Image 1 (cartoon, rainbow, N blue to C red):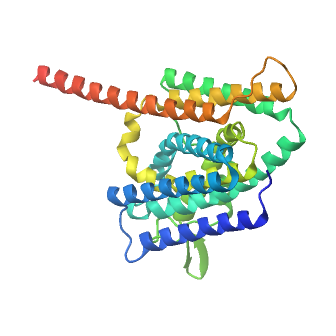
Image 2: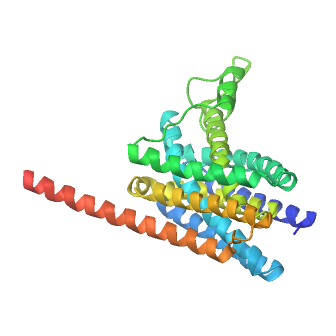
Image 3: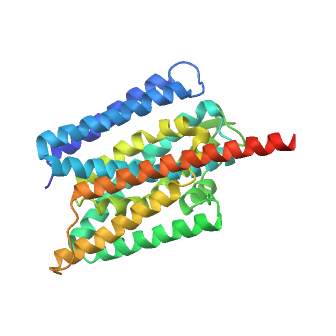
Length: 327
């Protein structure tokens, strides 16, 4: 189903309006740290907003498209949780003051949304023209899932490596030694210079685009509708900034989240291959309905989150017991 131009304009305009209001509310007055309470309110608001959009899709386009959006949204949001580890590393590496971190994340995520939009448009056009790419996407997702599990079993921690775009920005623009409030550019001795604030924004945005290399193929495994792919990504990215502050140290306790995400990627990869075979009239290949995908994704995230929190609690109790025995 091809969405009319007015629908694209309405959704993009609405998202920009909400983000502008968000930025105005958070950034008015003096710079200050983003509190857990604020983060909780905003995460709830963005989740409710996504749910309202799903209901709107249900009423205007039917249950299948609404289900595709919800499955895509949960998948993108879940994969984004794992990416927050890298955001923490970036913030620490560039020593971003806590009172400016929310602004860095907002601009970085907006950059990522623009770049993802272009990526989605290219992906949709390529898949429509070259159907064999579904096999490539499926195999890539299965490979990524196996690689995630392998790295986790080896105990390899995620690292941040500067990409080509970030290295180019560093070379192309003269940069101040330290932060100048929340400014991204400043004039010193008549010379225009950028501050580390711009560098870290580019780092967040470009790094998130690299994360899209597995998340975009994953959502194309749930829906081939570019409108659904874009809106699911947009709503997931909009709530990511507040989720960063809400989860905080909790991320370190989600020890099984990588296994859950690997399972989801593997499931969608297999689904892509099976549906490509089904479209090629292979009789034994089933077409997996969206409600099955939604159930698998939802159940996987609930199970891995609960299991992670239980293990974290058991480890805490074991540590306290060991400490008391030593004393």
